[in-house]
Length: 555
Image (cartoon, rainbow, N blue to C red):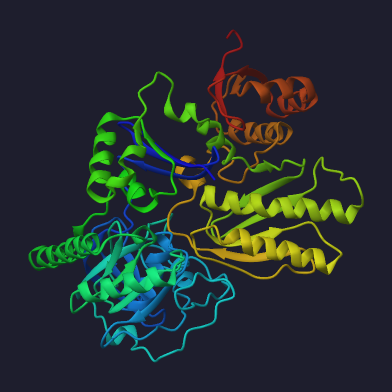
C-alpha cells in the first residue's frame, strides 16, 4: 500500500491529509483561532466534587470547566493503554517495573458519564450506554475484564479549591468541557513517558519478540526511578543511544513542567503539545510512509528540522510542493473531503450507505441501490453487506465518528452469511487506531458498536448548523409556509393602523405560490379585513417571513 502525507498550511488554517493508495484515509484540521488542546497540561483548581458521579470539575482556564472522573485520577496502567490507543499503537503489552504502586484499574463508564454532562457540571441526558470493558493493553474487541480492586471514592481524594496537575485527554465538544486525566503522558518520537506509572509497555506491532525484549530491557535500564514508558512502533530498530536521548528529553521536560507548576497560579497552562503539522509528523511519519509533502516554505522548514532531529533516515522523503497547482488539487483531495460530508455514500457495486449523525449516536443504513446481482437475492444481499463493511470502517475513520454507532445491514437469511459479515467487520476494525467495540450482528442485521471519540468529527469541524432547518436536515415546504404567511397576515393586520391598502413583502417563492394557488384565500382575507392586500416580492426576506405596512390606496 502506498502511503503519503500532504500538509497544506496557510494563514487561516493547517490541513493534513493521509493518503492510502491515493484515497483520503484521515484528515486533520487546525485553525489558528481554534488550536487543538488534547495533550496540553494545566495547573487546575478543583471547583466541584460530585460524589454521586464519582467525578470532579476542574478549572483550567478554558471557557468550560474540565471533567475528571475517578478512574482518570492516578491510574497508571489505564492511562498507559489510553495514550497508546490515541497515538495509534494498536496493541501494547505492559508489565510493572520494580515496586508498582498503581494496580490495574477496574473497567469504568467514565466516558459515558462525561458524555452526559456539560461544561458547567449539569447533566444533559440519561440515555444508556453500552458498557465498555478494558483488557490489558488491548483496544476493546471481545476483551476480558481486568481484575477489579477497591478504589477510594473521589470525595476522599479531592476537595474543592485543591490544586492539581491535569492533562486534556479529550477535546471540549459541543456543550461539554474537556475530559481530563491526572495520569500524565508526554509523547516523544520513540517513547511515551508516563510519570505517574511504573509500567513499561511495548507495542505489539513490533513483530519480533526478540526486538520487543531488547527494547524493554534497554528502556528498563535507562528509565528514572519513578515513571513508566511506552515503547512506540517507531522505536523498532532504534539504537540504545537514541532511546537514551528520548528518555533524557522526556524526563527533563517533565522536570520543567513541575518547576512551572510551583511558580504558576491555578488555571495556567504548563505544557502545550505540538501543532498539528509536527504532531502528525511525530505520530504518523515512519518508514511505512513513502512521501511527505508540504506546500508552505515556513512549515516545510520546521518539518525538515524536526525530521532531522528525530528521524534523519526519513529526511529524503520530505518534499516541498512549490508548483502552481494547489497541493490538495494535485492529489484530488478536495472532492474527497466534500464527499466525506455527504449523507449518501455510493458503493462500487451500485449499493449505497446513508449516514445520520446525532449528538450521541450515528446510524448507518446499508442499501442495495442499483445493484441487482447475478445469481440469487441472498447472494446480492451478502455481497452488498460485505462491500459495505469496508466502506463503513473507512468512513468512520475518515469522518472521525465516535460514540455509539448502529449499522443496519440488509437482512440476511443465512446464518453463515451473517457470521462472515461480522468476521469481516472485526478484521476491518483492526486497521482503525481508535478503540472500538462491536457486538455480533443480530438476526435483524443490526450491529451495535462504539468508537472512542477523542476530537470533533469532520462534520463538526467543517460545517455549521443550517440556519434554515436548524439541524433537522429538512425545511418546511412552500405550501406550508404560504399557509403560515396567510395566518400571520391575519394576526398582524389587526395591530396595524387603519388604511386603504395592506402591503405584504415576502419571499418570491411564497409570493408566487400565493398568486398561483392562494388567490381565493387572499380574496377571503381581504373581505375579512376590509382592506386590499398587495403582495410584493423581496429576495432579502427568508422563506416563511414577511413584512407588513399600511398605505393609502394611491400608493
